[in-house]
Amino acid sequence: MTAAFSASSRIATLDFIRGAAVLAILAVNIFSFALPDAATFTPFWRGDAGREEAAYIVNYMVADGKFRGLFTLLFGASMAMIMDRARANGLSAAQIHLDRMIWLGVIGALHMLFLWHGDILLTYAAAGAALTWISPHASARRLLALGVILLIGGAIMLGGMSLFSSPHMAAHIPYLRDHAAMMMEMITQHDTEMRALQQSINFDLSLYLGPYADLLAYRMTLLLGYPVSFAMSALETIPLMLIGMALYRSGFLTGQHSHRAYAHIIALCLPAGMILTGISLWPVIASGYDPLVSLAALISFSVPGRLLLILAYAALLILILRHWPTHTMTQRICAAGRMALSNYLATSLMMTSIFYGYGLGLYGQLERWSLYGFVALGCAAMLACSQPWLAHFHYGPLEWVWRSLARGEAQPFRRR
Image (tube, rainbow, N blue to C red):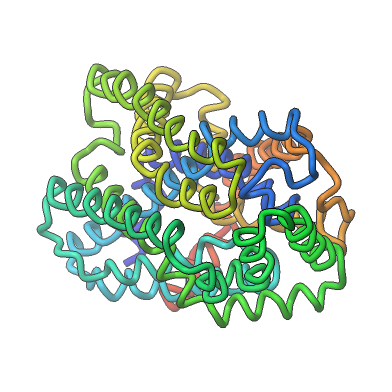
């Protein structure tokens, strides 16, 4: 079994794209680490506009959802790769995959409970487990078609729920449960909007700058309500994983297509994706950043443009790797991708220690633009540490733990 998944069989394009994604996703997650939840829906959470609105728009257009989607695409590709290799070696692909997902789910649940409520690993584990029984004979074309149909269908469903359902739905979404009354007041009573917004902000400031025990208790409620939350997030996560599997099996994500093909993807998808994303942002701005309109845009209206931008970003990264395969920065990004799990969890530890009350207590104190300095710090740490670590060890520390648990025995760790 170990030989089938040896480090020597790694695919450089997957490592490079994954590395770029884990670096870039910090530029989106930083707002959740450092700002109240209200900042997700409006740049006016401080009560003023200026640079906050510009930063909100730039993030929405370029980053929000795109790098998480790219990361999800890579997760689907890795699933297909591991299951295909297992079958080729006469092993039970389903059992190997399920073991991996079970232990990833455990790691994700611990991450959500003890470090950060924005964990994505538990969702990946649950969605990955749901895709265990995808036929090994399913063609790339069928996987792609299924993924796109489910993605668009899910976006339509989520958009309708956001815009037309009763505000009382917020009480059943774990992420919004503690803000439900505040959000409903914002929707139904325009004249008290700023007061309700401030109550929501005060709740977050008190929670994240308060004792660790309060954070732990709050995250426990999120974890207990996770099934409902997963049902919402799965509508995007599962389709993107299917598309990732399709792009792996077609050779797109492994760099097997021509330079011209990738250039065409960039030329078509990048401008079209930007235009569609801009169109999805228009109703948000026109509504004065109404919370439900903002939510609908993030989880529904922006989906078509987001998918095109994800494909364009992937094609661009493949061409960069193809042009500079041995460049020092390229190799460092590949190393960060090989340690994506460890780097993802390390950034949670780093950023919560900087912003939460049990650390430096900077939560809610800084403007959006200034947060990019902390993004640069986190990315520099990942780039500086990943390659030296892998010079001495086969895997990142959390990758080693995950592999060892999934395989039921300690895997080789230190290089000889």
